Every structure is written in C-alpha cells, then in structure tokens.
Image (tube, rainbow, N blue to C red; front, side):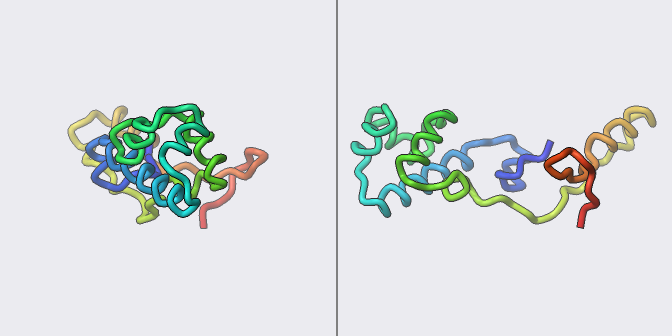
Length: 127
C-alpha cells in the first residue's frame, strides 16, 4: 500500500520519523503564527508543555484525537499541518522474476494502482 504522506526513502525504509517531525514543524509554525505559547496550546488540548515541545520536535508521536484538538485550537485544517503529499508518480514495479507465475500475478495485481472511485463507489477512469 502506498503511503501518500511519505517520501520515497521513508516508503522504502518504513521510517515515520520524518513524517512526525514535519507535522511538529508545521504545528510550531502555526502556533507561533497564532501568537500562542507551548503552554497555552498544551492547556487548550489537555497536555503538558513538554509534550507539545516533544511533538513539535518529532520526538513524540501524536495521537489522532490530539491532532484534531490541535487543528481546532490553531483554527487550522489537517492539510495545513500534515506534510505535503508526494505526487511524483507511481513507484517502479519490483523485480518479481524469482517468484512463481501465480505469486507474480497476485503481486502485480496487488501493486497495480487502483481505479479512482467517486463518492458513490463507482469507478472512474484515471486522467
């Protein structure tokens, strides 16, 4: 499964560290833009100041409900605080030649980009 919020190195290595660090940087920037201290943000979302500091530095993973509280407190949107999506195109198909035909076909089908669907679940052709 492709992780749209990670760069190619993170996708290969499975390292979420840069993801959380970027979220923290975005939270810090938005907090400062709003003129709010770490202490003020912490109180508003029910955390201690050191937790906000650790989140902003990417040392503490942020829980979804906490992220939502921070978004609301900063009068922001999730898209503003999440890392930019990488849209560099599809990843190359890995070499599947060592596998049997059945396994190759299964993997190729699983790795092939899915068709987009509209909100009613109907398939749409990719542009």
